[in-house]
Image 1 (cartoon, rainbow, N blue to C red):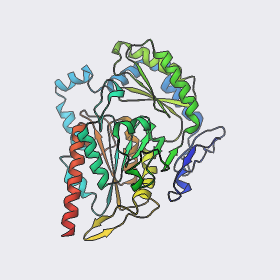
Image 2: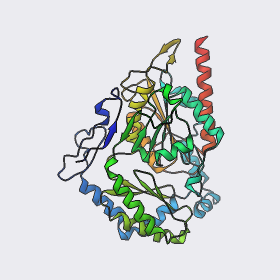
Image 3: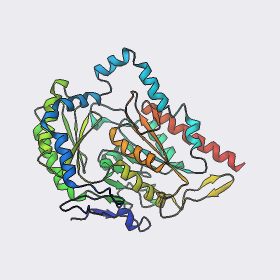
Image 4: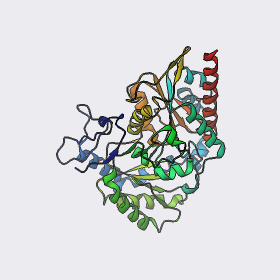
Length: 398
């Protein structure tokens, strides 16, 4: 089994970057963290699930799923206009606004260090027809920069890491691209102020052996979808995205069938769906939830000697150079809008530690605890968090 490319500081520890193969014969899985008994997944089970997912008989189901992923779809708008207010009210009761319940959110951080995780598209920037034009506003950039001055902060996106950095342009952050399969951070906080995240900081790429295959499927998808107007294929380095936001709904079925047909040629890749996008990824045991856990280790190492926090009138330093992962004095806050962010929300629920915030105007199944409607509310929440932290620190010093 080829080893993935992993370069991490010694403080993070070899265990954090370990790749443990599934004990099942003929498998090629790279779980992280090392699996406990009973959770190894057989490759043939993954392939069977993929065949079920990609079966020709599910074309209608895929189209319905594509409609469901379109928040502005005519049927969704008609349903809202028809008065599904009760459903929305019930959903909001289960996932109240993080702004309306701001005091409850910050109360959970009492005696703890907040650690911020932010998705990009639909969270820091609006969803737009052209994914290459998903620019964040300068005011949002200022808000994120302010947050990073007060709390350890990482951007976790399905986009290529370099593309996300081009959008955000803040060198002091950690960046996890390709749904967390490409993680990079600055070597030190002092170096971060001068260098982009291309220095010798944390690097974790658990799917590096798939790069040639990703390039092949990218080329195949570009060729196969070229006859479908509006389809856009994006190479995100460790995954490939097929955007259908600009595709006529009448062509959705043909697009789904085309994408499925191409992916069937690559049994070590799997197909999933996000917000108006198909995602083709390696069949490795890695997602945004695993990335969150890895980043808790890495961010703890990066900030452990530089960012104190206050409890009562005493100054505390973060747990240790070993990271945040096993530290109970930490509150991870993850904000995202897509299905892929659910993996991170589930990790927070499983840990019983952290706050998940879904960005959505419409009710949807989620493991998040709170909600925000749009990027403008995300920015307001971030700015309120910064101001709350400033006031808290000022009061504690008096």
